[in-house]
Image (cartoon, rainbow, N blue to C red):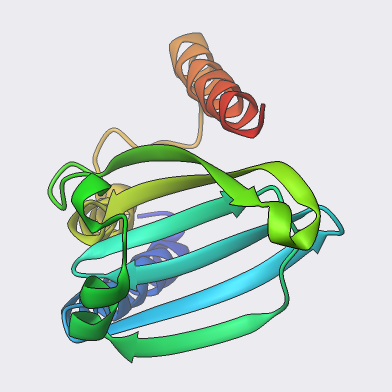
Length: 164
């Protein structure tokens, strides 16, 4: 069996990520954790988890570095968009226009991607096991190359669609 140590390292690394994600998933039912990162002067990203869902937000306005934590019950009581959130089982995408005329800015947008944590946990479990699959080899066929190219094209298309 070639590259046995590499396969073990691959499996352990993705397995650890999956276990940490399960811990985050359980914690998300009691606490909202949120991290806001500025990208440049005109945009920022926010990442948070609440009630079993990872929320990734792309804002077209600047924000400061910020780390927030609050109880989930307080967040549900203060969140005005609670009724508009997608399903915790399927996730989804929401695009909002924000009125920031008090700050001298208009037509600001906020796009939120909701990803259920159970899907990420399953993804990382599969990644930890894929190195041990019998079809895994050192060579790639043309079919594998075309499938990988198609998946990359779809991913880049989604990124362009979300940013425009």
